[in-house]
Image 1 (cartoon, helix red, strand yellow):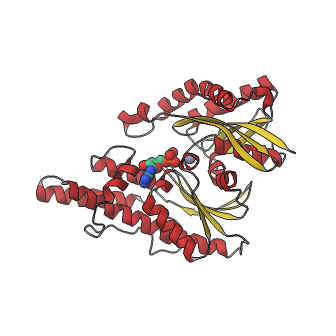
Image 2 (cartoon, helix red, strand yellow):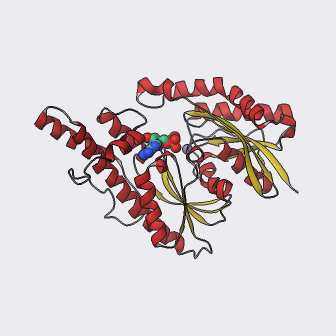
Image 3 (cartoon, protein in one colour):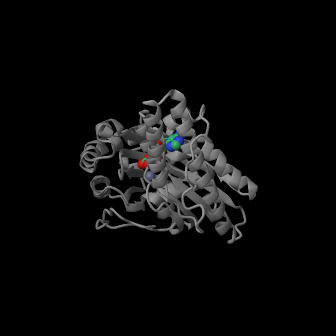
Length: 346
Ligand code: KG4
Ligand code: ZN
């Protein structure tokens, strides 16, 4: 049978990653998936610092590749190609990955395959669940928020997305404003569990307007105002105040994401897919309230809901190796002139 083994590299944000994925007779196996994060490096700056990220990627990527090959138990000569995120992302990081992949391609005589990072996320449910086209994908992370109609390896339609912040960013800012630890998503979710979501009024941005675009910056402002009014009144925040603020914020995010997902699903269902499916990717998909809200709108419409394991939802190189396999099978290859692109719409 057919066997394809591909090394994937990812370095577009703040994770340096390398992975080896093998497809044997239509069944993919992740032989290794190494992710080296940079959270600690950026912790003092309240966000990812591009210069620091670029330097760290350049320093870590060779080591990541060595580890991925060793853990997979494969040599460069066992590979069929090397795939790399060629954008979109922070240009210094993307360049580090692309240059490393080109060096491997030349040194080992392997075909080079450039992958769009968003396509990597979007094709993940085919790696994890063998999902067939077309399916609807919601990408929700610290950096992304968009609905994609995925019709093929190179056929994506962006139905809509955030017009300002990504939800993960809003969770992180909320945690920061309330003095909770980073990353904010898990801290806010934990606090929200004991909170009263009805105590503070949070807006439901863009819900009153047609379409599937989203907005999260207004929620951040609403949280800041609610916090300041409590502080002005009582001189500080109690544990219960924090919990209520988190619960109100999270309930607003859940409601907006669920309502917009319902609209996106209705657009997708107009295509009359034979086996309708709605998949999520991104770190925010770890949130149980959000997941339940999304699962509910899918269930109401008889649509299968998929949330791949978190390690494959957040940034990783297995998704890039897999997208590489998908492209390789279609005969798609890139030359050594493959550019690193800070912007690259699907
Ligand atoms: O996909 P991801 O690891 O990376 C990038 O965005 O690059 O997503 C990270 C984001 C962070 O903003 C984090 O706060 C958020 O996902 N996140 C969550 C939860 N776990 C992680 N947001 C809400 N609830 C969670 N349980
Ligand atoms: Zn990503």
